[in-house]
Length: 229
Image (cartoon, rainbow, N blue to C red; front, side, top):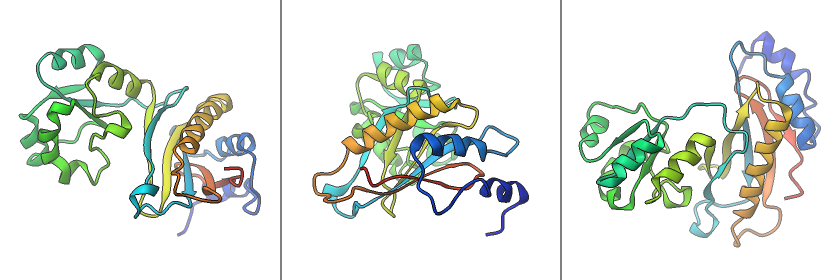
């Protein structure tokens, strides 16, 4: 893959043979941001899990203390008094059965996170083929299937992100924006890593995390020391 001059200049700042301390890696990642927009700072964590086994799956959510730097649009599936509660809590869209054809047939996907009360999951389940592949299906482990819609919405708006293994047993997550201070990115990094370490499956023996890489949207990867996990 051919990269442009900005990427090449940024890549010169990074020693590809070195494993950096988290603090160093965060500072360096900020320096490599060269795009003319506020790039997202992402973390990519390669694990020793085998996601094909149910007892080695990882999925959960964590609220980043400094937020994500992104405004998140929340859709809530609810009925009865929970509709009013969701609207009062700041949900961007609230509805029920009437939203199914809009999403299925019209391709409406103007939302980033879907929350549902448990009694609506039979309705939401019909959207599995649409929402599933996009990672939008509500899930109890991520706190998006709940009767406490106020807490769910507040957490999401405050910077809650979901983490999960992909097919290659890697976790990809945003930890903020390149405009964040090093301290803000460090807070978010620490919160996410603490949650992922806590989520280590009992079935996984030996070194849990094989590699950790930080990168901005358009920048080169910066490798972080991983053998302490």
